[in-house]
Image 1 (cartoon, helix red, strand yellow):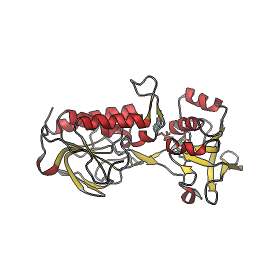
Image 2: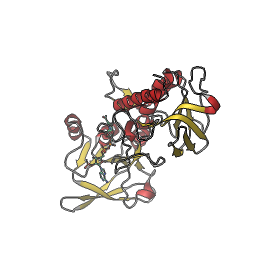
Image 3: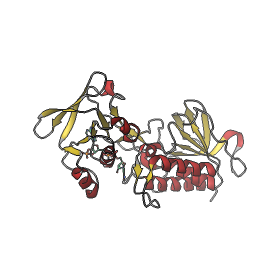
Image 4: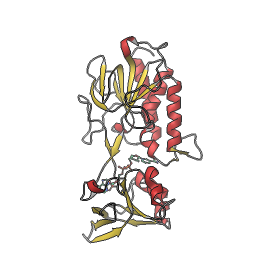
Amino acid sequence: MFEEGVDIVPGHDTSSKNNSAGIYDLVILGAGPAGLTAAIYGGRAGLKVLVVEQMLAGGEIANTAWLDNYPGFPDGISGVEFSRLLEKQALRFGAEIVSASVEKVEARGETKRVFTSSKEYTGRTLIIATGTVPRELGVPGEDKLRGRGISFCATCDGPFFRDKKVAVVGGGDSAVEEALYLTRFASHVYIIHRRERFRVAPILQEKAVEHPRVEVYWNSIVKEFAGEQKVEKLLLENVKDANTIELDVDGVFLYVGRIPKSEFIQGIEKDEGGFIVTNEEMKTALPGVYAAGDIRRKYLRQVVTAAADGAIAASMALKHLGGD
Ligand code: NAP
């Protein structure tokens, strides 16, 4: 974990084009695969690069148990290890990484101003790669039991549920992959999905449905989380016939999609869900401001596409600075 507001690695300034008075050539918001790839490309091109991250380097991938489809890792790699390697590579090319949460950005002018929980940073170009946060269900019991059996991270909390019963809510890649991961610990994994088909590749659906310790409740939604000190039961409703049942569980993992972290910036186009609209060069409507990774409106949200976005955004920033 980085120290709040502290530069963990002093940046080099020898090869920077514009390093007067603490102005960075490139400020990157978010240290996930998009942000760190942009840092690698920017740093390697000689830019003075700052990355601002509020959590851990790696972003969402650091919370992912296993990365199975990133090219070059034939046996897969753990999300934590992949994050560590990305960070190491960005640092090798001179990027500074600081821990702070971004509160506001003023990016209309030539100098982009980033106001964080600790300091203000300025850059000549800006890449927004802040990704997403988990969506919640907004049903009774959720506020009370969040962190008391309701979790958003199977990698972090799965081991607490050895030989226990857990439920996973959702039907996308995250829900199904993390449900399969949880079978390493839990005696029984229920998947609660609101439709009768997952939003995943058929091979993954088959793997989940056929797993002896996975049981799927199709066409079902959670109406309530119940429990005194911790989650004890879920109240499920079948959306087809409105039948309700109670399901005893020790824990529940919510994977019902993600919400973009884009509220701190105004004046750029976002879609109805808050995802930032860019062209294929990752440009927003503001000169010198780019978006990369899951925060963008895009078709495929994967580590490989996030990395590609980051590389393109950094190359465009370099071009903007007149360095290509
Ligand atoms: P997602 O693909 O948006 O799936 C969210 C799931 O939650 C959907 O099944 C959706 O149901 C369900 N859902 C949404 N709101 C709900 C509600 N209020 N109540 C109940 N269910 C609700 O989200 P994700 O799985 O977190 O994935 C995010 C992105 O990362 C996706 O683009 C995904 O492909 C990508 N990803 C890829 C990998 C991989 O390739 N290995 C791994 C993880 C994530 P419906 O199906 O009915 O809409």
